[in-house]
Image (cartoon, rainbow, N blue to C red; front, side, top):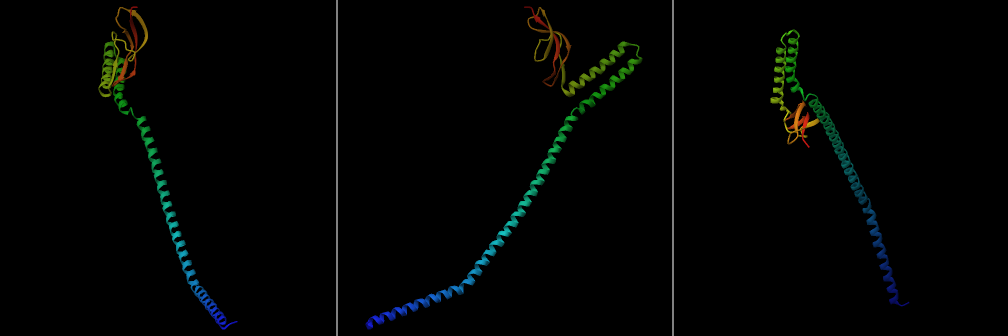
Length: 204
């Protein structure tokens, strides 16, 4: 082996030793920094867990508050529904209170007429008393409640207003009422009872 080759081998050995030393230094440095790095990572994970736990507790509290609000509103709505049903039922049950109060006066007048009839000797006086009560009752119903009667002999027959219970032929141009057996009644513009009538029909 020549001196040049020996020198070259020596240089390669020196370079190899230098590389190993550098690697050992790097490993030493990494092993020295590793505990701090792990501690930092562990601290960061602990902070994240604590933050998540805090958020979880806040969400649980918010959820509980929302459930409480929903239950309260459901209870309020149920109470409102029950109160509305009760009010509607009371309105239905007592809808005719004012009418009945007004009818009491007519009933009182009829009672007085019946009592007077028990000792009356003049039939006309009794008839006049009944007629007076009838007029007062009809006037109250018409003026205060818009209840009107209809149906008179000679009126034109209208199937929307009249219920024919019989008919006969006659010298008429169109069907007319011959007799009214039961008056019809309207509440404002609505028929609440059809008049029951006998109808005269035109001759065939």
